[in-house]
Amino acid sequence: MTTAIAESIKPRTPPSRRKTSQVNGMQMQMSMHSVSLLLEAILLKAKSLEGLGRVTDAAEECRTIIDIVESAWPCGIPDGTSEECKLIDIFHSALEYLPKLWMRSGCFEEAITAYRRALARSWNLDPQKSANLQKGLGSDSTVLRY
Image (cartoon, rainbow, N blue to C red; front, side, top):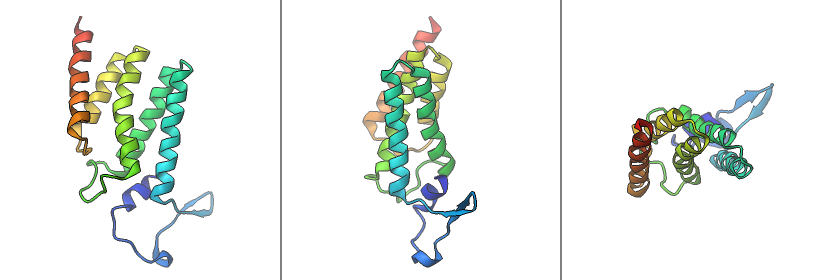
């Protein structure tokens, strides 16, 4: 999955020359659409787990999304990546959702780490989302001090 994300910004080659990966001896190739659908399913699972009261499990699922994208793009979202990409929308939702889940579960240090992780790299967040994350970090840090 991380390979598909990383490969998305490279120039396209004819299908016969495209690299594939092997999983259990089978040739596999994932399109960006497939990766987006899988990440969206993970995000929906996290929201369902939260609805069932399993907030810590929901946070772990959100962290999985962030880990996958972060391992594919360790320096942030590369220039030239479409802003309208569904994968980026899902990723941004997970970045915003994760600290809130950690706060609800009572894992305050994890929440602060999630805020910092979201703000530390160039994830092409729109100004409103970035401001919300910064505001959340400030208010949650204040709660931890007292």
